[in-house]
Image (cartoon, rainbow, N blue to C red):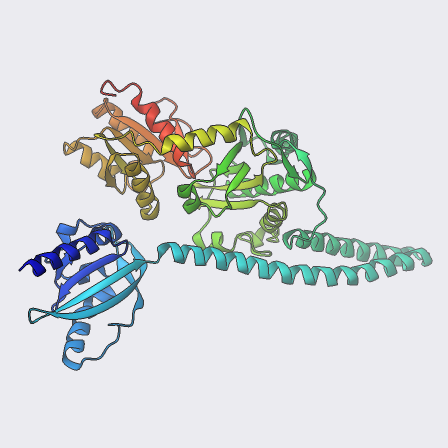
Amino acid sequence: MESAVTGKALLHAVLEAAVDAIILSDRHGIIMRANPAAGAMFDHGTDDMIGKNVNMLMPEALAIKHDGFIQHHIETGEKRIIGIGREVEGLHSDGTVFPLHLSVGRAEVDGRLMFVGILHDLTKRAQTEAALARSQRLDAIGRMTGGIAHDFNNLLTVIIGNLELLDARTPDDAQDALIRDALEAAELGADLTSRLMIFARRSNLKPVKSDLRKLCDSTLVILKRTLGAQIGIRTEYAPDISLVLVDPVQLQSALMNLALNARDSMDGKGELLISIADVTIDDTYMAQEIDVEPGHYVRLSVSDNGAGMTPEAQKHAFEPFFTTKSDSGGNGLGLSMVYGFVRQTGGHITLYSEEGLGTSFGLYFPSLSEKSASAERSHTGRYAAQVPFGKGRKVLVVEDNPNVRRLSVTRIRDLGFEVVEAVNGDEALALLRSGIQIDIVFSDLIMPGSLSGYELAAQVAVEFPHLKVLLTSGYASDIVAARGAVGENQDVLHKPYRQSDLVARLQALLVDDPEG
């Protein structure tokens, strides 16, 4: 008897301590036990899983076959997955599908057949592999492009040189015109190869210590005339930023490319935002959101409220000759040049876009001053983020992207808060009206449904004036809606953000709380 009790205690300890999901089911696939990691992985309460068929955790195509797989194994003993392991797909409670590795074992317990499944979430690995594949594809294209451009430059050198010699020796005006046309075409070819060399990171940069604010201001003088009166240009510069080592000409060319792309996506009418600030990337959470090496950077963001980009366009955006404007003469080299320049400078570039809402590019340049005032403030904020201060308080997280929602929930729970989730503004408002007790509403700005983040904030202000609201956005600015629905400016926490930034905003909201 004592041995049985000890065995149960040991099993309970193993289930509680396991980082991977562990699920025990009977011969019919009915879940008997599930550890906390399983509940977290599938976004279900473990008690809610007990007594239900394990196929509730599978996409429909697999779920309808699962019972047949079990029966086939029991009848024939054939091992298709037991003791072998396999990569399959799981189903979150919100219906989203994610990759996982499943290994299954079987055992006889008191004469009853039992199956034990151990599951490991492969989402992060899949994202890392996708980022690596994208980087490798661009690197391979860059190497090939650089080689072609180099060889083509040699050919153009011969062509241009011979045309110039021929021009000097031919007094015939009619032939002169033909030679000049040929020279102009060859020079256009040389210009094309020089832009390809930038993408291939083989251009001859002339970097100098630079203040990005000054470079942007001088470029905007030209852009204001180029973009036209229908494009509003707004700047948001941090009061104190570090110097960076960049080629001023290439930086201004990159900014011009991004601005002209933004003009086209806005169909000649809209708002362009240029923002600059120091960022310190040493935060685990931020590393999950943005593919940038840890360090101190100055981030230049260029955002518009235009048509946005499809997922397929985003996937190929930085590849040379890929363009969505072929009918209007686009050659697909603008973004590839920006990408090559930033990477050759030792920086990184990110792209965030949603169809119908706009696009935001983030250019990260290594800071020359790693001990700037802003960097020191960031380290102070990081220390504060380690201190849980939300005990006894509850936050409603409103976010339609399941990956971002899970990350936000983890971040806020780490600060000691209880968390309730909603996938959009409509669901969040329904939860509030149901009487659930909430202290803070943390909502994305752009979501499907009838309520945006601004509109949700406005409704909360009317119906639940005691609640605090914090909005967040993937854009460098809330340019899609410059003013809140309640007629006053709304402060927005911009993605990607550090945990210390989130801590500062939440603490600021609680300062005036009478219970604080």
